[in-house]
Image 1: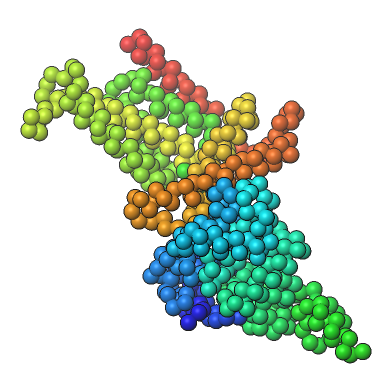
Image 2: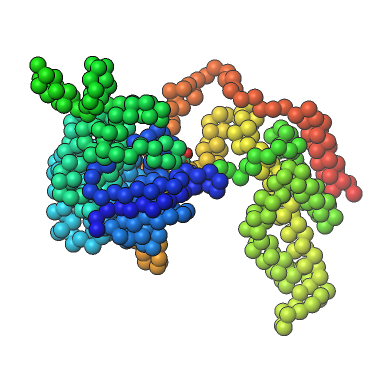
Length: 267
Length: 252
Ligand SMILES: Nc1ncnc2c1ncn2[C@@H]1O[C@H](COP(=O)(O)OP(=O)(O)O)[C@@H](O)[C@H]1O
Ligand SMILES: [Mg+2]
């Protein structure tokens, strides 16, 4: 029953200016990237999934629960959302307490919450900062704190809104690993993301949004084979894919490793 | 996102300084000449200007907000004013007097008049234009900046609060419901609000400094505040009316 079912929803902030229209999509287990130009409606879409906004028409079912019928807090056990800006949530004096806030809200005991929080900080690589004040960390580390604070709640569905923003190579590699591990544990991972290389290397499925509509949806490799369509919505292909094309190869390559292996075999 | 309403009207065309003078003259006249007639005439003029400016409907909620104050003024004056002598009517043992009610009515007219007079200014003038006019007239840009940020503070704060509320609800914090629930939610909400405003204040001051806010040179302005053809005439008339009112009060 794990999954999100979006049934033909529309949404607008101000009447007469639809931000999302007729979106009908189903998320089961594949990790999914949501890509699209700024203003395409990605953040609005994930806020609807999370129940922060309610659709004007249509319904959204999160693990079978209609988002219209539950408060955001009630849904928090089912679905976690990591916000773009970590400053919007941090209020405790130590990292560990900040991370424990969510788990305690959804009914974990203090001990349980502490364990899950330490585990989450460990996974994300900042467990040594557990007792520091979050505001003494850099913005990119604060972002990691906000990710850990959702991981520690252990929801079966996790959505990230631009998690790679401000992260260096190591941070991105760590995020990749976390998302892949979550996927392996059976967690449904969705992420809004601008880094196409990251998309190609991490996600099984990719959804392309443009002007409030889903214009492409499919396995990541297939989506990136539509070169013209991707260009039309002002996105670029991953570097490995571009290189493959420039080398005149027919297949769509997603990672540098694929490209190298392909060339080795040929030789 | 302030009270300013963008419209295409004659009143919007008039330059900010003229409207400031109008607001002060109109607000003060009923005090200089304490008669119902004067208050009523000025009020009617302000309302007409609001109608011409297509913003009359926006003043109604503002008057509504102050209605409690206004009504209690009339009631208290009607019952308790020291020079009350002529009873007018009574509710049970409570007697309302003519003198008190009349004075209460005058106070009421003054308050509504004040709101409408400044309404003409505030509802039809872009805050930026207003501040820039003052700076061009010689006010310190620092003070201009402070006024400008205060005007922006409220809409900005409420946007930040909405985002923060979303972030905490997402972590399972109940924000709706009983008083106890709301009290518990206070700290997780107010903490980030304060931190965010401190951070943005620091960043804004750096951004300003980088762009030469404190430079000693004479500054030019990016936007030209539109000048109004009859500004000088209107200003002169307003000031004349004001002086006449004072003379009238003193000598007649
Ligand atoms: N709170 C809001 N009120 C009104 N309009 C909004 C709000 N948030 C976003 N929008 C508008 O909705 C559209 C989609 O925005 P958003 O979902 O943030 O896009 P993305 O995340 O893809 O950049 C944009 O045109 C944006 O201006
Ligand atoms: Mg966004």
